[in-house]
Length: 85
Image (cartoon, rainbow, N blue to C red; front, side, top):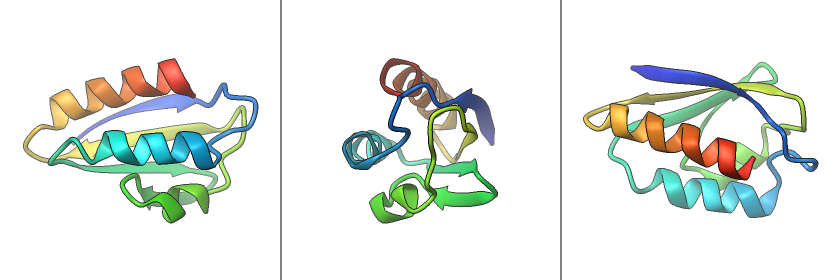
C-alpha cells in the first residue's frame, strides 16, 4: 500500500464539482483508493462517500492506494490533488 498526505488548498474544500472529477480520475485505476480525513475514511471512487466527508480548506487528508497499479495510482492522485485541490 502506498499513501501520501495533503492539505486541501481549495477555498471550498472538496465540493461537488471537484469530487466528481476526483471520482472519474480514481476509476482509471485498478487499485482501491481511499481518502481519510476529519476522522472519516471513504472509498475515493464513490461520489457521495467523498462528499459526505465534509472536507474543507485546510483539512489534512491521507490518500492511500492498494492494488496492482498502486505506484502509478498514488503518483497520479498526488498530482491531481496538487493541481485541483
